[in-house]
Length: 229
Image (tube, rainbow, N blue to C red):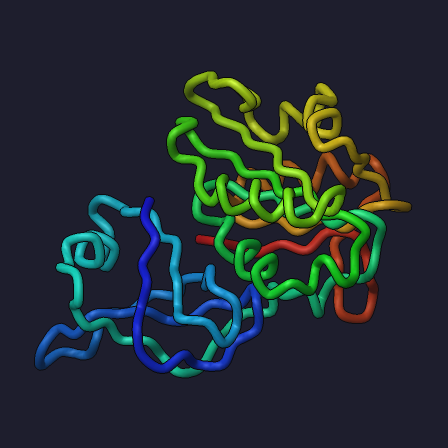
């Protein structure tokens, strides 16, 4: 996984949306894929991307030299934004891998702190060294005491301060809420899920057992999801 920083004009987008990023293939049409933006709207573009060996685009991106030119489609897409989320006491950002990117954009933009009493950021990766934006989140927590809580998990190795399990297991055994110092209930929480589809399918089922349901435009609920692949 790596962050990509782009100079140049920044297209308009809302925190949580994606932009199509691509490379020029000469005479052929540019090869592009959608990636959630990690930067705040109006700031220089930043993308948080995982290399997929055998993938059509990411191996090319990771092999580009510093200063190489990338194509950015001017129109943003996606509805995974806070505009879809009702107010609540606690907002939970739950992610796996690079699914953290849209949440970083939202935190940098600042709206979560205006609408919710506190924010819980849950990040799950395979190895502890793959955890990203930890220092930035720690600095944000220091600047906003009591407003943000970070919960990190790893599934392949243990580390200090990191839960050694999957998100679903941590939810089931209670360690997720214990680490967050917050509860996941319909009365108190809104949940946004981004990353591995298996994770949010399983989490939706577990949250459903507590009476939490998916947010819909005409029927507000408690869960908002972004299908990342």
